[in-house]
Length: 514
Picture (cartoon, rainbow, N blue to C red):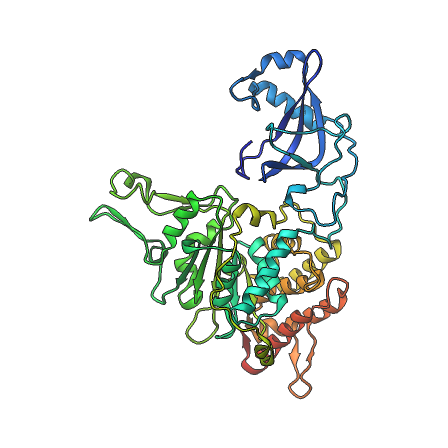
């Protein structure tokens, strides 16, 4: 079985040993799979179905003694089996057995072991494969499977920030971690000195990343194209010259070491126009994993460049690379376009009251000692991998109403399907804890995914944001605030209300909002 997440088989064959002849069946359709701790986790598309193979069909197949876990099936038979599986009656599986209150990934949803009732899809003799059947149990969207290792990591993250002498709101740390799990790009925004760059560094330290696994790239105001970041092919001297940022070396390392985790941090990301120097990445990061390929130069130059072995024409950006940026918003920076905002979670860190600084423990002299590395496989176990949107009906209704309100004010803005999927992925990846609730997390996503695009003139946004009354400090006639009131079962929208109020205030004072 392939370890690559994008190399999932549609069907899996199972051999049931008999006294005389072995019996063979195929199970499907498999949507995607994961490999972890010597086993495989299969997620079924819809309901699990089984089709038995006749002796005549078995004779058409080829079994290799050298590779006992692979069966070679003729194409016509494979097509026939695929059709039969689609038309088959779903199996009546017994419900999953709750093994423990806090199962780790090694114990992921094991089915009751009755071979007569539940098929075992073991592909390797030593692989403890399990079936995770979508729709087998109706999941509570408010609950996420508890992961003991993830909560251990969060405790380590809290401790690490304090040991290094930094004070962060726990909600911000959980929010940042959830974004890192579920987003292609995470952007930390806020006033200078709030510890944005330090947070990324501390996060990588808590993960135990060493050396080039954490790469900090200071963005230069002179960058105007992606060649400033990734480099160019010097056809005069016939060599490829990577950019001075170290990005290419880090990506090449991550491509070779699939089992390790890498973080690329773009510091002061908006000192140059992101759409210019980051243009290739904006397209690549939205592609499915396995198709994210960064092109350095044309293929026809590969045989002519002296260092093409070190720098091939393309680099595969694997899932083990996380991208994060830090930004300040002032007169020296550029504002993000909707193209960037659609692809990023934009977080603003809360500033804790200064008296908390006196409560910090004495800073450790060598905090790096004893930090165990979190490898890519373990980090992947933190993630909730599902492809179908599982937002509640009321949440989807709210997002649709917000989209219509934004779209009526400006045809160029709204809540697209991409944002809905990203919000769903964020909520699915919210760790089990008692600090950040689902309702608060939905509110944060409203701020980080949607309200970041609320920019324009007073004529455009007056009805959306409302009219700010300087005497009372209240906002009147706001469509968005009314929507928040109508959907209080989704969230109280505390943070969103603050942002809308700030936008209305900017419109009143400046005539526009940014």
